[in-house]
Image 1 (spheres, rainbow, N blue to C red):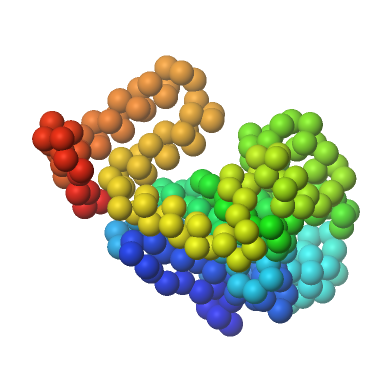
Image 2: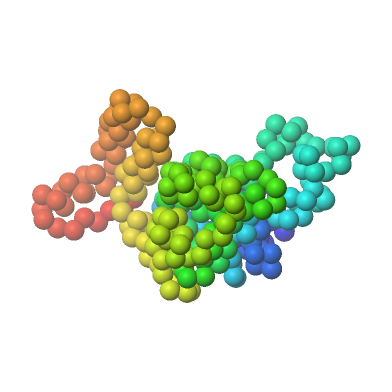
Length: 274
């Protein structure tokens, strides 16, 4: 069932991952989140995939955590909301958000560009997953919300890490304190959407961008992406050293030789992604 709820295909070096519970606005349950983590872990090692597009089927990107799970009434107990006599796996006792939060981590640790194509709601965990992506393409149907407070929960899945880094501090605080829904244009003005396109155009636009990246020197691109994420928690001295290491690694690739030769010969480079 979890496999049916996550679709995957490869097109021209781009792996397209689709949340596929359209009847539930692509709300994520435990099994679906586990499958997403496993898929992204495998994509990290898949050299046929240079970039990834994350999108949702039907009328939504992802409406967040599944309501049945969040109520504590589902097959898997939720700390504080389920009958305390119900057995709970040791892993979940230590990490209550489990694969829901782990998937946010995997969007970063897949170490390939991940582009979000958003139409309809991106709320709660769905907002966190969108914010973890490298770039967000949204259409005019997009709605974004840190919805947890509406249910009496504090934010999770990395929302409080990404929001103040992507938008202003005051907007981040407003979103997590009020649960206000930002319509597409407001989300674009706040910087939560990088590109705002007409209805139905988010996925085509994201695919075009991802395909261009996939044609590039992907080892250098992946290392550059890693440097940016490390820079968020590093000193200048640390990142200068890390950039030097990444530069040495990328200089040993076929694409570095091709890029420098093309520059000298005044021609367009033909990168191989290796």
